[in-house]
Structure formats: structure tokens, C-alpha cells
Length: 124
Image (cartoon, rainbow, N blue to C red; front, side):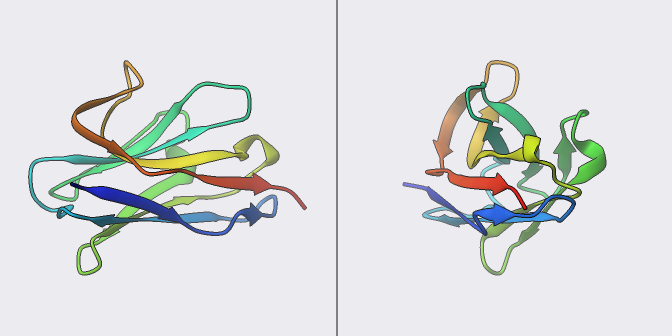
């Protein structure tokens, strides 16, 4: 069974870059035609899909965050990462990585799986 685990700093200062990594175990990020996603949930708000990277390395971004977001992967470590630049307090959220997330329905697709989430606070 695939497992996902987010890691990264819990506190980021305004204007700096937020960097998170998702480590995947129990399955390869390069096989199975899966899409690997980053999603966040600000306090009191719903889930927001940020972007994704495919099994073949293709990337996709939310139009509202595209200018500040970069998703990459390290296949040797079976990890994929998120970088969000120029953060503000509005970027404070629980950040999740997930396999097979449908941004339209905000639900996992077939063979979907969540990481446990990591709280990131943007504050000076």
C-alpha cells in the first residue's frame, strides 16, 4: 500500500520561499500512470489544489498559483517537491501531498492516497 509523507519547515517568513517534500513509499512515482499532487487547506477554508506532477514528469499548476509555484521530483529518492515563492500570511495552511486527486471534485480518484498533511505558518 502506498504511503505519502510530507516534510518541511513549519514556519516561513513573509516574502521567503516555502519548500516541502513528499516522500513516497510502497510504490514508485514513475510508474502506474499516476499523478502526484499538492493540495492545501487554509484555516476555515476548503481544499485548494495547487499543482501536480505526472509519472512521466509532466507538471500542471493551478492558474491562480502558477506564477509562484514549482513542482519537481527526485526519482532516485522517490520524492516530489513543492516550492512556493513570495509567501504571505495568506499562504498559511495545512499542506498535503496526494496521489490521484481530482481538482474538480476535490476528492481522491481511484487508487488515491493522502499524506497526513503538514502545517505551514507564514509569519515574521
